Image 1 (spheres, rainbow, N blue to C red):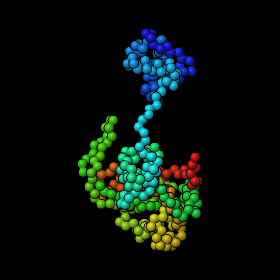
Image 2 (image 1 turned 120 degrees about the horizontal axis):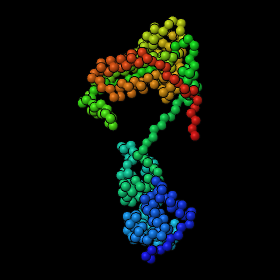
Image 3 (image 1 turned 120 degrees about the vertical axis):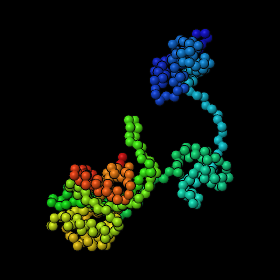
Image 4 (image 1 turned 30 degrees about the vertical axis):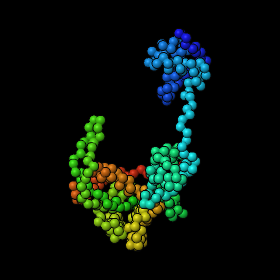
Length: 353
């Protein structure tokens, strides 16, 4: 072997080295060192191993000798002294104190640069923005990220209301009409400044970012939960007068004497005195209120979601009238093949693990 150090492998060590060479997650340098030792254990010379692995003879000699001297531990990188720490605990504490407090007026979130300036003014230590970033990363502290949350109000009967609405969907009263009503407001009529390009094999459709505004339109919609059909009306104002006028239309087309159960959220047009008086004057209308902050229980929101995806999100509207025409055409076409939504949620609190 031309003076090469002899390498003998015990079977557990050999298996571990073979596993390293076959691993997709192992570091490249760890795989190379394992292959050197496995080749050396076969009795190959340093030169033969270097030619086979396309590396220098000195590299083979180094790792062969370290393995022979210290075993598997010799294949690990030697500890490096490195550069001594420049910043002590006071700097780290100052960084954490800044990142967990309100940023200076008028900024709303911290940046690494502003934290570095804050540290410099408090503990008089000069530190770079990049070093602030490294320290924050080690602490898993991300002051630039904000997660929203919502304080639930009127919680005493939250789940009772949820179950009431879900029971209505899953087991509607016999012979009664079940409606889900809400408004979709401020729908923008926008036209792209340049025509888009259709999809092609291997390439998605393309759409111009710039657009022209042509006003907005709003509509109120009533979804028949049993049939899936939707009745809509374009509205110019979203208030109690408009809303009760829409209820008048529904009341006129539904057979006299037939009970009507309606799901409403807590929007201002729904809870206004005028609306409540209208409901009190029409006793066959039974309201099922969604809890505050749970308007997603209003099934008509499913229709609005589909409307947005199918018509609005990538739509091009040359005018407000064009937008209204496309909205109404979509509803008419949809009602010809409408099917009810299958509601499976029973209103029980979701379990977390």
